[in-house]
Length: 199
Image (tube, rainbow, N blue to C red; front, top):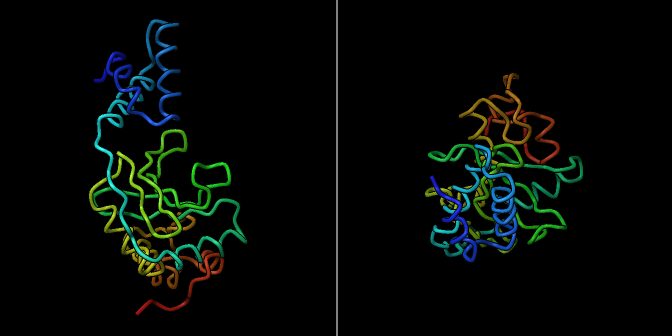
């Protein structure tokens, strides 16, 4: 397990946001004498981030179809997100970064854990450049390339494979929803065909 000394040494290699969080952990340890188990996990995670080599940006392709899904859904939903099952990695969540984000309008790529502990895999810029984080995983880039090429197909594949809609995460129970991989309400919100299986 990473120590507080490891975290102190890692500070210069962390992003400004992570540096701020690391300093709060270090200050808390100095003030209270120890950290909670969850804080200890964060020390480990921050040291791992700092020590991981910084990956180079990669082109994942034309995002116009993916952006169209989010733009359409944004007319109906407050915070649209798409959760896809990436083989070997588990559920990956994509959502549009808000106006106060570091890169507003880009697509955040994270795991599907609780908000406060989500693992950030990187962001996809509107020009199709994926800027991976140090936490990015093997196989993710290829999956994002597939998703950029055929978002409706990958969304349907997720539903067929998991039995859940990738847009609302509900279990697919209707026979037609099971056949296409997502439900009628989500199809309407995201502007996708529904009612017969994809060829």
